[in-house]
Length: 193
Image: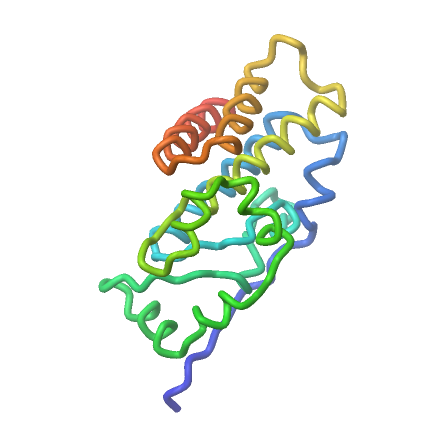
């Protein structure tokens, strides 16, 4: 009939926000969930999209431990010539609609990101995955903080390094620095998941 339809599978049974803070989760499980977020984000970015509202509250977790990223209401799509679906999204102005959605993140992002990064991310001319990377840094910090609060981490745990990299990534304001910290975080997460 010429219309685009979207079909999705059930998202999951548990919302990631309260789930990640469960005191019974081991550090390895929490880091495994963060690893799944990073893998899902790569798929989103490989399709020329930026999620723009990534947080534990926008994840769902099944009983088997598989994680789904949800809530694409603020998605920003940069058409990729190899992806006709993304071109169709642009033609239907869905990306324009998503730009008008105001989130809590966008209220304080300028002060957190720094002027250069904020201005470049608001530009429609570039695909900037760094927008999502900064959200992953906060999610990584949340994971380690939950383990600290639960008393699950010995003082010599390598996971403190994950928290350190995440904090540095949050404070970085140059695009290259954000990329560097994200790559370093990914290595640490992969090594510890």
